[in-house]
Amino acid sequence: MRALISVSDKTDIAEFAKSLENLGYEIISTGGTCKLLKEQGVKAIEISEVTKFPEMFDGRVKTLNPYIHGGILHRRNNDLHVKTAKEQGITGIDLVCVNLYPFKETTAKTDDFEEIIENIDIGGPAMVRSAAKNFNDVIIVTDILDYDDVIERLKNGGNTFEFRRDMMIKAYEHTAMYDATITNYMNMRFNGGFGSKQFITGTKAFDTRYGENPHQKGALYEFDYFFTTNFKTLKGEASFNNMTDINAAVKIAASFGEENAVCIVKHANPCGFAIKENLLESYIHALKCDTLSAYGGVVAINGTLDEVLANKINEIFVEVIVAANVTKEALKVFENKKRIKIFSQESKYLITNNDAHDFKHIDGGFVYQQSDNVCEDEIRNAKLQSKRLASKEELKDLEIAYKIAALTKSNCVVYVKNSVMTAIGMGMTSRVDAAKSALLKAKDMGLDVTGAALASEAFFPFRDSIDAAAKAGIKAIIEPGGSIRDDEVIKAADEYGIALYFTGIRHFLH
Image 1: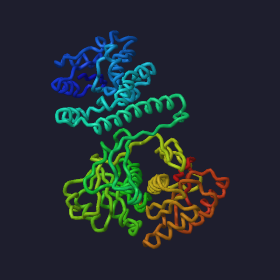
Image 2: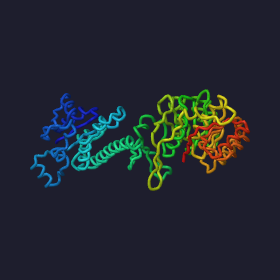
Image 3: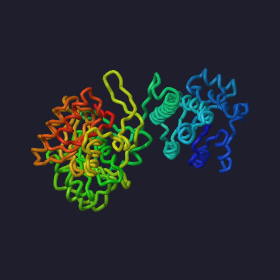
Image 4: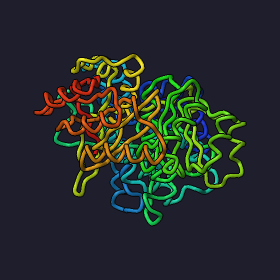
């Protein structure tokens, strides 16, 4: 039996090779891998001894040879294949262990195009695909986490057709993602990220409990192992809807850096938000915005969930809590609550992956775009349009309202007072309706919006929204501007003594 080993990531490879040797495998290897194996006492055969050719062209050609690919690809149950292999002096290769040149890692550390090109693997993917194609006879290993399982199966009769088939699928996933990474990089470098083909690749982090509805199957796929690294399940099992709600809540709470932000979300829309002296006070004030919607909602905590805060949250039913960190004492508070789900990022503050691009499925395809972000300079450099200037406190309220509005379904208006969201209207077909809906909800909750700041993610097309805001007692407004009737809007703000700021950037979210 023969095993071909050629790896870029050499973690645990010597131990794997020794185990194969002990099982009777003859090891053939390439370049640096072969050198390492020999240093570790493995009797590895240099690839050139098999191919009868030296490595050429700075290592660009070393395994592209019939002695290698014939050894991998010939079918052992095909008499003609076996005869041809024997006539040509081709020895079978029964296991192939390959991982590829670190293309993505190279692009992360250098912009040198020549170096990047040299880290595009050719022989590696060819061997992986050959071994995967002939999985009936060959085991293909592309993941260092599979080494122990492979050895165990070889020892105990676990080298089944089904196992080799699973490894085949994994191998093609490996090369497909590798090629997609190269293609996306080249399109980003030379076509602004929008080439004639777009590849979105992710790794399954876990199966969700189900999809949007119980009859649908669902799973979470991640970029760059973000959730594997930064998302720990402490209690319960996440559903598809939980993950979309968590995404909405965390993006809002995390957008305030190290501040004591608490965001409550229901059906991917915020129904409570506050920044106060501590997280307990933030939660108490956030809950006041819409206590009805908060029932069964998602709470995102930009800091540590401790026992005191846990007891307060436990006064009502919330379905999900996601926090930067969770103490053991806090977790114990919920140990008898079967329906609640608790997740932690095990960090000091909530973090996001800051994906560069965004996409949305539509029937027949998907639309793809650069991600939308609210830059701090966007708010800081907003241009005053009115005669009245906002106070320092009002400016902070404007910032909070504007960030929430930008991360909430359009049409959207947000009212914030003393760093607490007091009302929100979102997902409406009319901006005026969004404003009215928010005020009605505030009235139902017994909240006074007098003196609040108001934000809209897009311009007000008419002055009627300013008239309504003034009637509600709003003292400061921030919006993108850009309406053909901006002059009328500005005039209305001055009539009512409202501070009005334009950012110049729209933030629709559909």
